[in-house]
Image 1 (tube, rainbow, N blue to C red):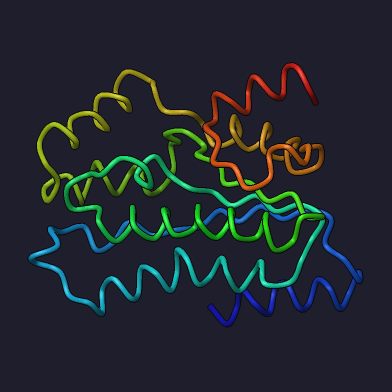
Image 2 (cartoon, one colour; image 1 turned 60 degrees about the vertical axis):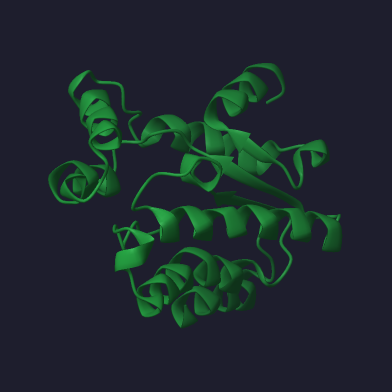
Amino acid sequence: MKFCGQIADETMSRWGRIDGLVVNHGVLDPVKRISESFVAEWKEAFDINFFGSLALVRKPHQMEEDHSSGAATKAYSTWGAYGASKAVLNHLVQTLAVEEPEVCTISVRPGIVNTMMQTSIRETHRQRMDEADAKKFVDLYESGGLLQPEQPGRVMGRLVLNATSDLSGKFIEYVQILIFAATEI
């Protein structure tokens, strides 16, 4: 978390401003039922997924884009800490939109992207997940249904540079970004 704050401070010190910021990080752990988890595990997830983001966005920038997750709006068994920390991130975006109206702040669900997190879901975490949830992610991978990182990455890069203020405070899905990109950017 301290490192996240240092990144923003060093950038401001070197260039005097940050034109756009994409906050895209997170951990899925602990992947276990709430009854089996410990408060310390949830605190660690929140330190990374939420407080790391807070450290990056505490100083206003022209545009901020925080990456959320479908798990912020739909519960998955054993993903409580991850989903809750991403839901809190969505509220942070809403709060920043009210407190810093000159800064366009958006929470984006990038879609299901073929990242190391997806690999860990298939190879490690699926044993602790409900069978139907685990199967969904395995099937998406095997059928080629996962987005490649550069797909949402390119679109979100354009969004961070060209977003309009009417999007500020919103939680938007990757599909909505594609529509926006095709018509507005």
